[in-house]
View 1 (cartoon, rainbow, N blue to C red):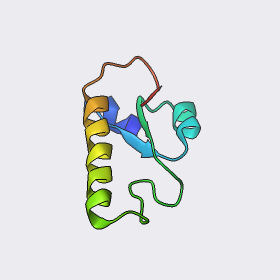
View 2 (spheres, rainbow, N blue to C red):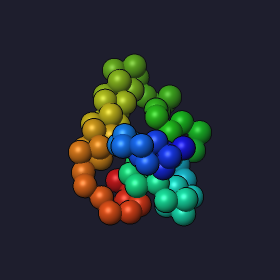
View 3 (cartoon, one colour):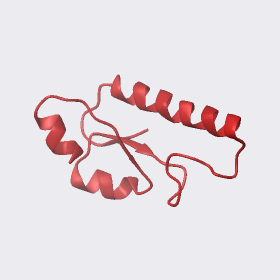
Length: 75
């Protein structure tokens, strides 16, 4: 779906635990998730540390959105 959205001019970042699959289908910006069960979090962390972790994920997404790429790129 990310590829189709980009075709209409919107920049996207796909967060996935399977970056190889995303590369194979031609997604331009791929953010590798930490793990399969909890791609956007770490339940073992305290609430404050979990919040910081998620903010770092968002910061990585914003950096990827602002990056020029030519073809699939894993961040």
